[in-house]
Image (tube, one colour):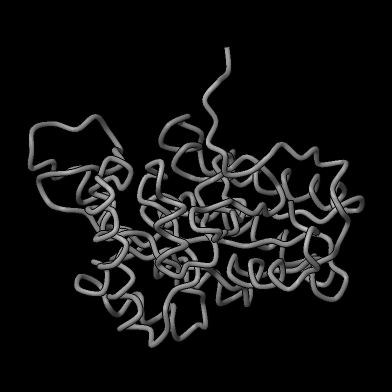
Length: 296
């Protein structure tokens, strides 16, 4: 029996890959991704603080909305204090609902990454034509607002169809997130001879799986970040690695969790001279400039 395979990349053992470094000879690249999401009221998908009741589910809608109204601004203050960059993963409906929040990330110089239209919907359940429309609508809105097309994409709910990488490459995207199968970037094969880079995106250092799904507290999540960083900085002595941290303002922007997140951020910032604190787009550009065959 032959198992079905995605045919996007081949198995490449980590210890058999070419060695390379990040800019200035750094070995560990660290990025922070803040998901900026807007949800439909009374319908559609959304993370739940508590089991949802009949629609309109005011409790969970308001909890998610707290991130855009308060939590995201607390997080900006925390990252500003430590002079840390972020990648803002933006639902295109944020430009209609909370344009000043996206503008604040633009002012910071943060990378703006495509993240669908809204996290009230899944991308992977759509037909090819419908998915192309979703990508086109979101990309057009981000391009209009930012004056340049986004380089990277994270699907709402990490929801891929079998054609998602192809459609993203055909729409001009240089990299996608979503995949957590590696600690180094990997090239994906796409139809028509195209390719797109998969930049590692975390599902362990991600506050939704950790706090919403596994019910860990803010202190546990911060400890995970610190432990992951301390171990990866040692592991990166042998090979270049990527450490991403995925955040949602309605979760870690809550003050009792923010307190612990700031502790983890300070720990990483203390090592800024030894690592590359960056964005996924900068990682993708660096990989694209490496000699052919360096990135599997």
